[in-house]
Image 1: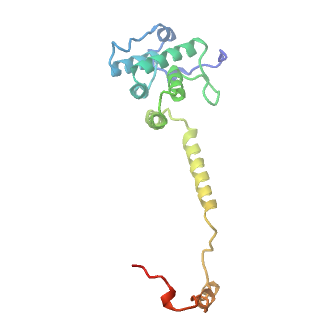
Image 2: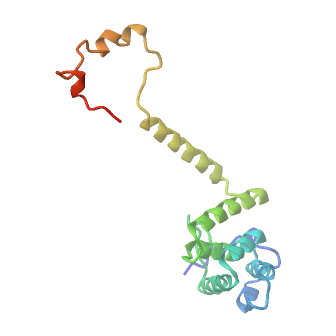
Image 3: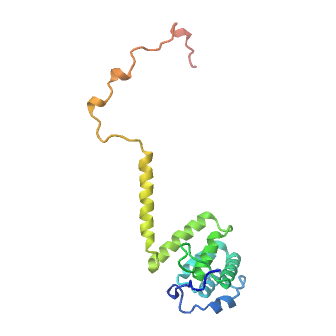
Length: 188
């Protein structure tokens, strides 16, 4: 259970969002099209970026999306879910997306695609976390350092005098088998 003093900032929810509405909604997946269901779930969750929910519903299918929504309702009834850094509660849409990410019924490739899509939508909406770009830069720097560590050290300039001479590399002795050429098997 999330402590009562930790709240969801209202700026992350649509003005029409009401927790009571979230708890009252029950969807019939068979009666609605995928698009209608996705929009209805996004509205009930107070999601400011409904395209995220629409894409999640598309990936999971209508029946599984309704199951995720019911789990989301249960989490919210029990006080909600904290964000990863534990600074605040997730929005109901954030809870839905976390449940989507934890679902074993969703493929890893779909989860990655969803993450990229969500990040782009949040960036476009201005809700993208300020720390994200810094974290991305740090990750790229670490990867560059790793690549550099894996490369053999080579001096920038090699002087001609440091290079070996051909007579040092090639041995004057040839290992020719004793006997005549007739002893060597011929192809053919």
